[in-house]
Length: 124
Image (tube, rainbow, N blue to C red; front, side, top):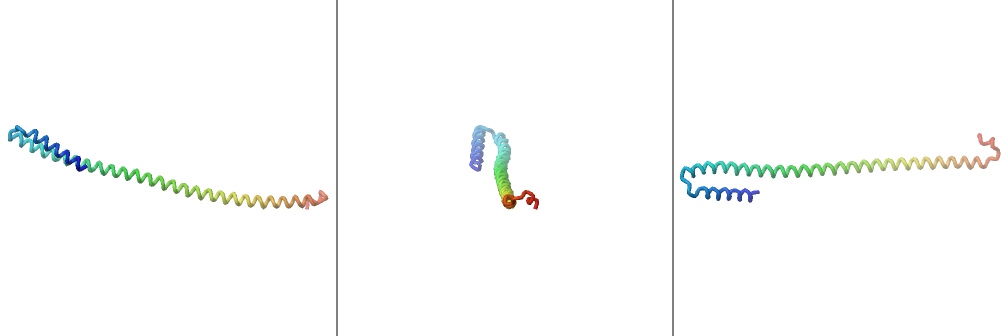
């Protein structure tokens, strides 16, 4: 950025020298007023360049922050999903255990029913 500003300053100076060749004293005084204006414009260009750099940096930082926030949300989602899956797995295991106990109870009753010879004894 400073290299560009230095090059711009050299170009302005060279153009001024070319214009000054063959000018009268009053024309040179008018040129000094133009120098002040060009100094202001040079200052404005420099300030604009600095502002653009700041905006570019801030924009990059903003994009980075958005990316970090997205990754944080994704991590939180994965943790929640893992917790939900664990709860679901525990619930299914409890259901399997209860079903197996109920199945064994029914099987024992069938075994008892098969051992009875009289159908009326089933009511007991």
